[in-house]
Length: 135
Image (cartoon, rainbow, N blue to C red; front, side):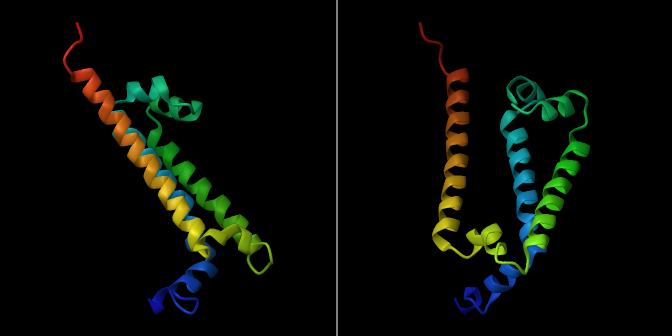
């Protein structure tokens, strides 16, 4: 457990804004991967996706360049902000959740709950669609 103490890995991770900036980009990749996996086909994306940029990218077969651009944007924006804030008193507000276990755990729990809800709703829709017809 000493590895994750203030003198261990957590402290090194906390002060390396290049690594922290990668987390939002990774989350975007996971978000879009789950969106396309759970959607099944592109017609669901074009019908139900809230983002006009994603709908445009899907309709015009530009999803891979769009995904690369959005990941680079998220990483670049996070990196720029954290680099500017590093060495100041405001840096801790940009990365406070990595040092506060309660906040970090609550974010993880909310993320897991959203995934569970997505799978439950997806399963319910499959059962309802392929279940016996009601009289």
